[in-house]
Length: 567
Image (cartoon, rainbow, N blue to C red; front, side, top):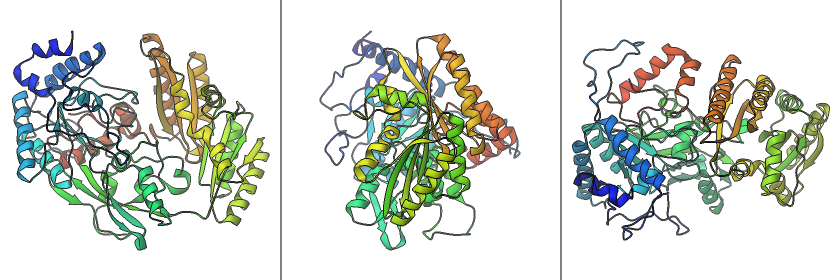
């Protein structure tokens, strides 16, 4: 059935919902390209749709998104709830009519303050904000609208009206999360911060900067470099990640072994709460003992407690000297032993990454680093930074430790060109795996973290299980902090193979927890790992999280269904 034919069978309110707002202009980046995904020109009334897209829109957004939202559910709490009482009343969300009224009210309130129409109901836009090919899970349901605010004030208006009508709010920035973090299982409004991507204030002498949530970390560093500031922001997740999502997931990256994770670089946050209230978590000094650590509550909360509209970030000094080194090992255990030796010797490496023999083979097959051909062995990649003398000394120390653990083929970069060449395999690892997909194949990418002394154990057991199940999978590890990723190739239409992958991932999580680890080191919980979180922290700790959620969002409208199930 074509979209046009399907739309003709819908009530008039639905036909209006999926028309393209003629006043809506798509955001444009600095290089002139359209920002975000799923935008179509206002004049194009016949966007191309595949049968799968039509089905996704009609079935998930129509029957599940609104169906769940308008189900006969219980109302808000009418009694006090004891601290560890996990049985909370089920939230009630808006009806179709109330949803229409809310969208109209948002438009009116924004217009009163001189703003243009920020609401999109373009079908492609809805699909892009409810489904992700990156994600390991995509629950049924799409948002019924996407809002593109330009300021904290507009975000506050959206939140207050959604609170009034009990409409779910789902924050969206880079869209690169891996656990269904921005999915819309209960419909609602996706709040895309595409227009909020600016530097608000740069305090060079204090080495901090105030930014909006949709600026990318790479863009931020490019702007700092162009300013000649001598400063940079050191957290380096995937290249498309943006500050808002990085805060929501408490992400990290290759630099974590030296610079820590996102939480370590937040000074304060401006947050819009569920009812539209705007708060700032604290002031701008590097340290404070005043009151609760609200930064720690919102960082890693995945948009379930509030919408971050500004962040004051610490910055680091750009080191005087950089270098990169690569060394191969006969086994994963030898590589892990060398990594542990580096950590225990206190060598201040800037990054220490592990790729197994399968991942090295994948990079060779992909050809992205040609003409360089890599030895298909477990390989450690190191980054060094500091003074010239310090970098030289640290390279020598690492080389000696690697040699004592059966390391061979040690190479270190002598200039910037060689640095780029040697790091290229690490940089191209995920893309090389994705490039191998054929027909109905997908890549399931997930992560766990354990005390780094146990990393070799869990990798060896996990690799053995994947081999026994006949799965094609590779290992990539931030070995300096015990965090590793499995990327498993599977056919999404092969039910048996999918079951094998799910079994493998669940077993990996179980092993990590048995080793005093965590179900996720940097991807966060989202929709996909809620069951794992319960296993990790237990019902009482989860009940405390639910109480925090209920205190700040009593109607459970902020990104519902993420981290924990709705009551």
